[in-house]
Length: 285
Image (tube, rainbow, N blue to C red; front, side, top):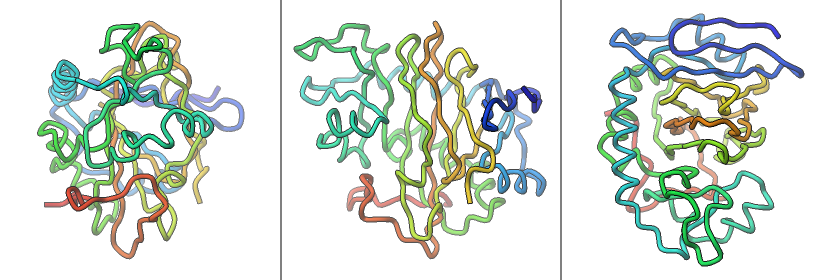
């Protein structure tokens, strides 16, 4: 295993078979968050398809997101017929959510999606509700003040400009829990196949670790170069995955996707579509 070391907010836990790289993240940040990315880092991102930016968000910002999500869960009221189990498996998607309006119309709302096996036959919770959620999405960036502030923060805007984004818009956001013991596997995939654009891969993911992410609690894995409180930038075409979380620890993250809207067409075949109530909001003020 070849270690690619880094300090503070994260470390790349080297390459296993097939050149797969694990990203172990640490959520602690500092007030000395990087002011900008270097040209060398941008080049590395172009080559690998992902980039780790250490201590991009402060500990206080990460804590604020976790505290806010606790408040959202405390007010959660999802009718039994809307209690949708989330899956990235294509066949399970069709069975569990593919035809569910609750999922398909969630692009301009804040909705709750659950792990498999957390409901009984009547749709009642078998586990505490705060331990049942797979993710909350897909418009935290638009309707929640804390997540809106993080998403549109000056340092995210500065990062977008440094990456050459001229007209970026925010297409979706999610809070992912990776619950201990049951946090579901996310199979190898490319974001550009779920969020399709013409030309291809005008989508950029930003993945913010709010808790330490290790191989035990299902960190991210990448195939470097697989595209044509630490923050991870994820190119739309880079292959990545995360395993089932079989540990005793959760792995909370906040993640959102940007699209370069200049000279780009958002596919009408995507499940996620802008609406009159919520057109894709611009990142820049």
